[in-house]
Image 1: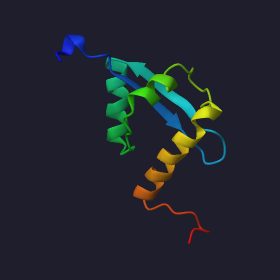
Image 2 (image 1 turned 90 degrees about the horizontal axis):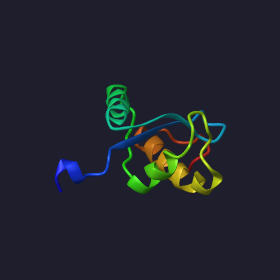
Image 3 (image 1 turned 60 degrees about the vertical axis):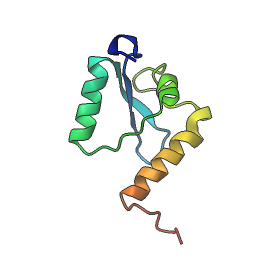
Length: 93
């Protein structure tokens, strides 16, 4: 597929404080998406690629919490990222 026929690149960044539902902290297409990805990589923020999930998240406004229907999917991603970073809950056996 040539570059002309590829769908535009979209990126969504989420912020999670550990207490509340994750919120959209950045979203963009094309050059803005590339800048979001560049900044994330520069700060060693783990990246997760899933076109369907990004498509859903990209419909939200900046600062919006993710919808409850996506809690499980996002929780699994956060748990995996924590695992990769060696973060384990204190009461985990």
